Image (cartoon, rainbow, N blue to C red; front, top):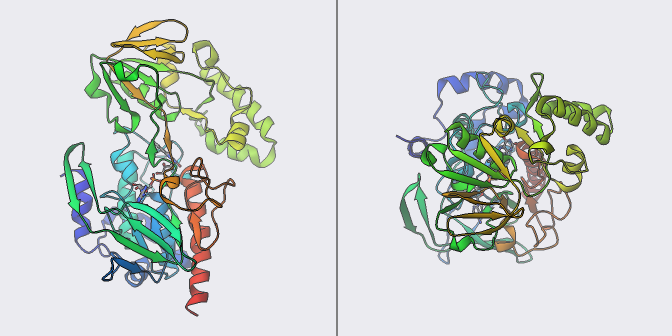
Length: 455
Ligand SMILES: Cc1cc2nc3c(=O)[nH]c(=O)nc-3n(C[C@H](O)[C@H](O)[C@H](O)COP(=O)(O)OP(=O)(O)OC[C@H]3O[C@@H](n4cnc5c(N)ncnc54)[C@H](O)[C@@H]3O)c2cc1C
């Protein structure tokens, strides 16, 4: 049985009582010590609304908040609300939770940051997990999180419009979705259109809701295969082929490494400058080191230290085609939100010649690509590691808190708008930011829910 149907099968049983021994043993001891964490399952029985009751007109009026999206951010809010005894409803367009991790990541993916920065509120990762848990371990953790907090989402509910009518957020969902299951077959289910009304709307649809596919000259004439990195699963399928990866962010660098590890002829396009740092320096996580240094030193000084250490470990990245921006990595993150790449072995493969670096693409040809330096090279497959974007502007009719331009809150790290509108997971700070947002949002809603219902 594959991972996804396994999850669904277990949920078909009582989601509140399933308790795999190993996982619970390692987390429950800690939960007893935390007063917030007492009896999550009994709280869940009281608060998880599961499928909301829809009236004759196809409208469900909810007593508590509506959460859109069941990635880590939506689940973290659900868990926190459960512990505050606030009933909620949770909508998901897909047929599983954490769909990005289930269906849009490659098999060998590991968390980029140490596990203590990636755990969701109220439940640490098991002690037996390595510092950088694998995708499978992260998904097992997510499953256990659902069970522990009795989270029961309403699947196949794509939100297509949401607007405030003066009293409620009126949220409309699409009738049905056709969805590829585990890379094979199509499942199409018909549901009637619904409208949900709630005083609180939590937007948890993520920074990565839609793949970005750039329009590059001649791309439609290319006779080879073109795919987005979200469709990439493993280098195994590309053996014997010449593959070009476009983009050198974390995804592009890791997909290239995975391809090279499968002995695929791999090339990567590096269009701009970018910071690459080793994931660890002398056994210490670079992320942990930079957080620690930032407590004592100015960001520019921290950047100088990081760049010096990176130079010792990786060498001069400009020499093999990846020049560094003039602003340092931490300052760039602070000012532009651009995350440095954490290298897990790609630079070594570039140095050894197993991965070739090319400059920006000029245009596609029938069987290859012309680069801006005039080089022409043939390729069988092009993988666009060109990132993702928020889909909020497509469905949320509000533009004071959320920007219609990029679908992020207008002010960085902002989590609360007007009329009970919230954003979780839009701070460009990964899972750590998700947990921080979810905690603040749940506290705010618990307070306002209790005020309304005079609890
Ligand atoms: C490849 C990759 C690796 C990453 N690794 C790390 C890491 O190691 N550490 C870290 O801290 N961060 C990491 N991140 C960044 C980030 O933490 C993750 O993207 C994380 O999944 C974000 O959680 P989320 O819930 O905000 O969004 P998502 O996981 O994207 O979840 C959003 C959910 O909303 C649903 N949805 C979207 N639109 C609608 C709609 N209109 N109606 C209903 N449902 C909708 C989606 O189907 C999805 O299930 C990584 C990101 C990527 C892309």
